[in-house]
Length: 181
Image 1 (cartoon, rainbow, N blue to C red):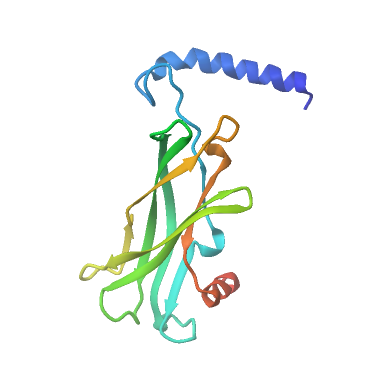
Image 2: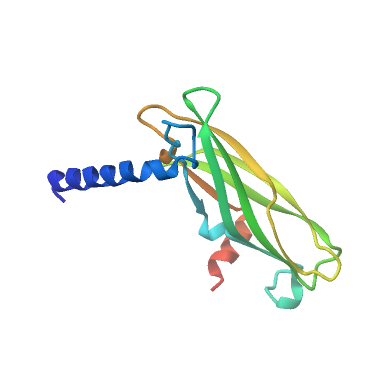
């Protein structure tokens, strides 16, 4: 697309945005301030599902636990310093207790990584504790919020980053997940 058409399209968008701004006075940051661009969010496809089996088979009767990351949400705001972006992220995880699970409690390994392009800038892994109530074999839960502070500059906003979430799988689990239909 020629630069002239692209600039005209941007100008039209700016005019429309300027017309809509008065109706958004109660949303977002304080008056005359724009919300900072937030990082993109992604759930890593190969690590979006988690299964533990009692033995090396993938038979349903040997299923201990199945998990799936079903959502990710977050907020961001300017950090305490001008060159920081404060980000809060939470995951929604659906867990199913299998017939081979002994007891009702377990820990599930999850991670949240910050990437910039193809580079992992930060990665945090943690164990999410799960307690299945009596007579309940499937739950959806949010394991808690993760707070991050990302460096920003006039030329690199929060949009330069991507937040990637998944289950922390062993190499064997990763191979099995890639083979699953």
